[in-house]
Length: 156
Image 1 (cartoon, rainbow, N blue to C red):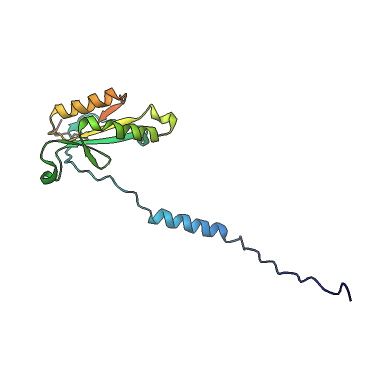
Image 2 (cartoon, rainbow, N blue to C red; image 1 turned 90 degrees about the vertical axis):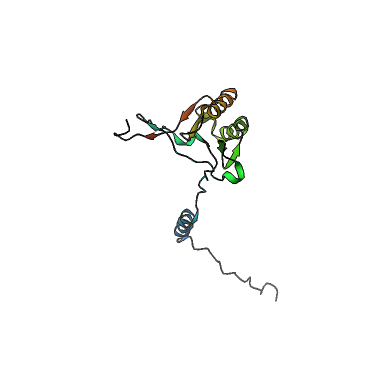
């Protein structure tokens, strides 16, 4: 009676892969719809000056924004113009570490092309702007642009 035992065959359970691309597409679409990018909260007043000629930046991924103006919350921060980088109000000489960190996060081929865009309120005195530009120059961040709004025909 030896050898009369039959080996039981297990039923193969295959995963149906026909619907897999559809499932992946639905997940991708779900995350694209539900994900929201956090907009930068401007903590200083911004009324940009008017300019007769304006030029667009070719690659906006290499631009870091610095906002300069009187704080919106004057009770907490006073009325003197403040400098904002990445949702933080700072002194003009303290902006370099944050901007250098942003530069280091860029791909190697884009680091040399990093642009610091200054969004300065039109009523800010030049002293604060000069302090910021000197700090940028001291830290080898030499590509600086000043944001402005295109002047209408009646303002020119």
